Each structure stands twice: as C-alpha cells, then as structure tokens.
Length: 397
Ligand SMILES: [Zn+2]
Image (cartoon, rainbow, N blue to C red; front, top):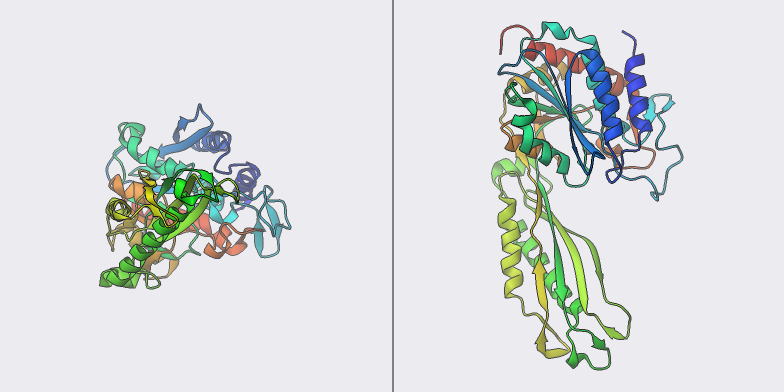
C-alpha cells in the first residue's frame, strides 16, 4: 500500500504551527475533515474562544469493549532554540530520517492513526474505535485534563473505552507506567529599603534561599525513604519523587533590599504516591520555616505557596488485551516505566488502562533538528491496523 496519504497528512501537520501557546484549532480542524471523510463522527472540544481544540472522533458500533488511540497535536517551541539547521515547520525528507518539529513528539503518530484508519475496513469493526487528540499536553497535560473531565458527555451514547494507547515517542517500546508531574509557585514577600540599612527591611531573596534549602532537604528525605520494590523496578534511576526548581526572579537593584522573590517548583511523584500529599508536605515545612532575613532579626517575610497544578501519573494493569496485542505485533514481552509524563494520567483517572508506545525516538523529542526514523514511521499504520483488528473485530478477547 502506498504511503502517500501518511506522508501527506504528516506534511500538513508539521507545517502547522501548533506550539503550545499558539492556536491548535486549525490543525485539529484539518484532522477532523480528513477523519470525517474516512467515516468517523468527529467533534471538537474548544476553549480560549475557539483557538484551542481537542478532537474526539469515533467509528464503529457504540458498545463496550472499544479502544482509544491518543496523541497530542501541540509541540514545544523552536524559536530561540540553538542547533536548528533545518526549517522546523516543514517535513524534511532525507535518507533514513524525516525531520521537523513534532515528527517524533508526536505528530508522526497522529498521521499514522489516520493512515491506519484509511487502510482498515471500518465497517467490519464490532466495537468502537475512538481517537482522542489533545492540545496543551506540553504545558502540563491541560488538554487531556479538560478532555477526561468531559469525556462521558463528549462520547454521547458511546461507552468510554477501558483501553487506551498513547503513541508518545518510545521507539515502539511498551510502557504501562510513568510518574506524574505537578508544580507550584512560591512567593516570598519581604520589605524593601536601602541596602545600607538591612535591619529596616526584610530581604525576600535571603528568605527564598532558606525556602529553597528546605525543599532541597525534603528532596533528600524522599530519596532516603525510597519507593516500593515495584517502583524500584519501574524507575531504577530515581524510585522516589524528584523536585526541580525551574525559574526564579526577585529584587530590583544591587543596592536595594529585595522586596519580593518568586520561584517555581515542579516535582515528579511516583504513580503510587499522592501528588497532593507531597505539596502538603512542602507547605507544612515552609510554614515551620523561620522567615527572618539574617540582617534583620525583628522583621519577617511572608511565604505564600500556590495551589499545585497536577498531571497525574499512571500505573496500568498488566496483561490487558491491548498489552497482549502490542506484544504480539511488536515482538516483545517487556513493559516498564516511561521516563516522562503523558495525558495517560488523566485518561487513567477516567477509568482507562493505558499503554504508552509510539514510533518516535525519546532522544529526539524537544531537540533541535527533531527527527524520526523512516522505518519506524512507515511501520506505524500496519502496527496500528493490526492491533485495531485484533481488538475490535470478531469476538471480544
Ligand atoms: Zn509528547
């Protein structure tokens, strides 16, 4: 079968500027039009006055036992990223690799889903095939959260499938688990003044330094506590929640007492850990902190910790029909923990057992001159079509 359709869709997708803060709706509308032509019922869930969209497409009888194929259409920024030697928004076709932002993460998989649908006999499906394509995944899985919250309503009469395949870049390895991501902002409010008289103010940067050290100690404690044997085998490099200080800003000038300091903290909780409890531990630790600046013993800063955003982790059941079908098709028998977070955490919350497995290379995601192997790219539609036939045609497994 010709790959022309696969390449055409991919080229249209790579050409669309869907950097997370830009509009995703035009690219989703393009996909919706193609899926409509293929015979799917398509719906766009929109927000930001129609600039952003998730796509929900379904085909086949509206019964239990369906399958979700999912991926995100948004991409990480490329402007200002050093190292690009090619046009990020054009599909570059060179030798054994295809280039462009999103080839690996993860427009290649979206195009493969459409190409698989085109080669399938959709009239032969006995259970529903549901495509859930999201936006705003790269900025905290916000589109997936929105979609999971409204899923029953968006699917109408169609029962929500219990199995979901998320085609994030794994070089076709199978992952059934990943950590979650959560984050919050810490704001230290001090009192400004002339730097020659520190006792008359309270330096927010000094107090922020104490807060950073305290969160660092909590990191150490979590590392010492460690995770269960299962978590150690899934995440051998770091079987505990890890923290990251992402940004910090504060102060006005070298000769002024810093009035305010803000920093962002993110953390990746194990899928068997409650991410809210970790946020709570940070809040409790900071509430105990002595908020004095060393130069100003009689005044205290105020430390305000924001509510967290949370993209949950996932720990799906082993041995599902989807896992069996992927193992058979891909010739593997190993599943593990993915080193990154996906929309799967939100889908799991909506009752789905999720597997993360896709054609892209993890090492290529978010990189300049992002690329995908031609072999992995061209193999996708057959892999998807075979798994869909096995799960959705004939008697249920
Ligand atoms: Zn991705």
